[in-house]
Image (tube, rainbow, N blue to C red; front, side, top):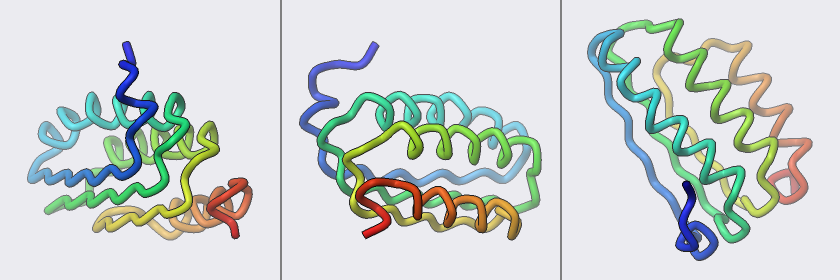
Length: 108
């Protein structure tokens, strides 16, 4: 479950690195945790995510992208979102920009 500390969290910086699809799949649990934090935090204002993959990992990157998308869509406190990624295609980047534009605080 999510602890009371989630409602005091203001800044979160995450760095993911994967050299194989297995590494990337193992990171999925952490991305799921990020979804829970985004859904449940009322104070998180700054999120920085670095997602570095040595090779293209379409399956995992799509799962991770969807978890992030769901989390941002259900969050109302973010004012700053920075994503550094080596393996998101243009469709994912465009969809994320559109989602940011719909966010109540990120869009301003």
